[in-house]
Image 1 (cartoon, rainbow, N blue to C red):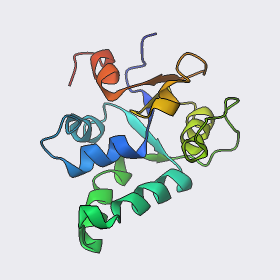
Image 2 (tube, rainbow, N blue to C red):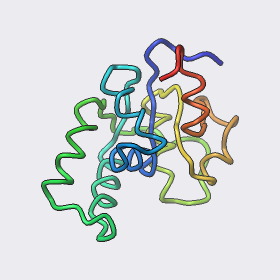
Image 3 (tube, rainbow, N blue to C red):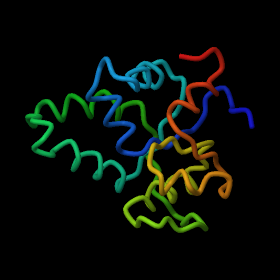
Image 4 (cartoon, rainbow, N blue to C red):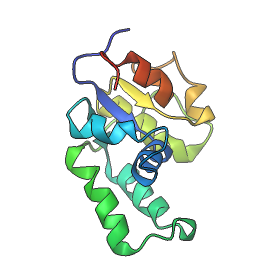
Length: 143
């Protein structure tokens, strides 16, 4: 399956977190990708709340200003979608269901995740489900 020139993408929390927190990490390329309009990240109230909650974990030692700055490097590039329909597939981990529902309602081209429960559903949805590395290989011209 080839992607449209600007794919609609749902990134799970851990993927966004890795891209935002680790500027030299293996997912740092995603920041430039969404900033330059290489994709349209989809977000919902539920997935934004999850990202906000996780950024507040004590292990990250982020001040409220740090968290706001990180969110400001993601949210302006996102399109907000409030899921109106559930994905016909249910995820084994109920905490992952909002990402499936967002992808379904937002007519996403793909859901990018490293989560095994979500990846196990690949090939069973109207949208692709794949790892960040697989997504990077799929992008025309690479990143």
